[in-house]
Amino acid sequence: MATLQVPLAFESPVAAGDGYVAIGNDETGEVTIVDSAARSVVGSVKLAVESQDWRPVDLTIAAGRVWVTSVRFDGETTAADQVIVIDPASLEIVSRIDVGSRPLSPTMINGRIWVVNNISDDVSVINPESMTVIDTIAVGGSPAAIGVANGGVWVVNSYDATVSAIDPLNLVVVATIPVGEPPAPGPEVQLPGPYTVAGGDGLVWLPMMGNSSIVVVDAAKFAVVGTLPIGQDHVIDVGLTPGFAWVSDPQADTVMKIDVSILQVVDEIPVDRTPGDPIIADGLVWVPSTGRDTVTVVDPSKG
Picture 1 (cartoon, rainbow, N blue to C red):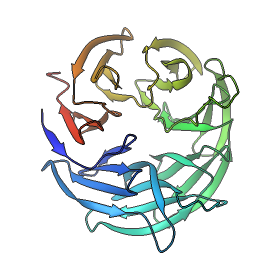
Picture 2 (picture 1 turned 90 degrees about the vertical axis):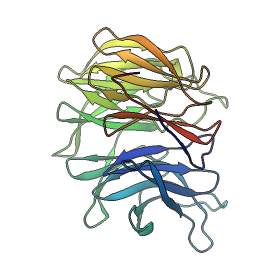
Picture 3 (picture 1 turned 135 degrees about the vertical axis):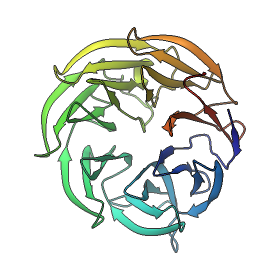
């Protein structure tokens, strides 16, 4: 296990891929890049431009770039927020792409970057080569997560408590699946997400923040096959390694190891204070801890 010192906020999105780990900071408006093999910090990138103060919401690494969904933080109202694209090697911003309102969960699917727009209730599909939006797909209320499994794209609609299944070739919704009870309306309901949909072995893992559980769906049958209560209100992201799912518990300062064959927690591994969402990279589980500005690296074969 190893620990790195990096600047973190209370909600710090993390992504891994192409030999890097990227960590956003929504308080300072920057993204820190880590070399995952060397386990060393490469540097940080400020998202602000001129008088516009942009803050990271979520991010992914794909096609040699870091894709950061971002919102304005300077009091200005905009019709569209942005996906900001960073070259992790040069630490330069190479593009700013207008998408819908409050974009979340950028994900590479079938050679395209998909982004759910939480307030405009749709999905933006981006060509990573031209860095332009090629389609916008209407989905349910307040989409908060997206993922791919069994050849389909899955979007969690948090205020509808449904999942939209999308044909990634024809870019159309083919099924809408109820997965729970919608949250009660009222001022106490917070904006959801970002969540991450995880898929493997024909199953789709759907974090449901409203009822503190993870719903598991059979991707071929469009049917719920299990619900795993977690018992805390911070279920946002699930990481998958062969045979296991990983969920952080910031109240207990642990990361939970779940046996996917029996849908049960089989281990709770202590990590640093206030752990964020686990990220899988290079066969390891990376857990950022906002309470101490560190990242804990767990070996699944030993943890």
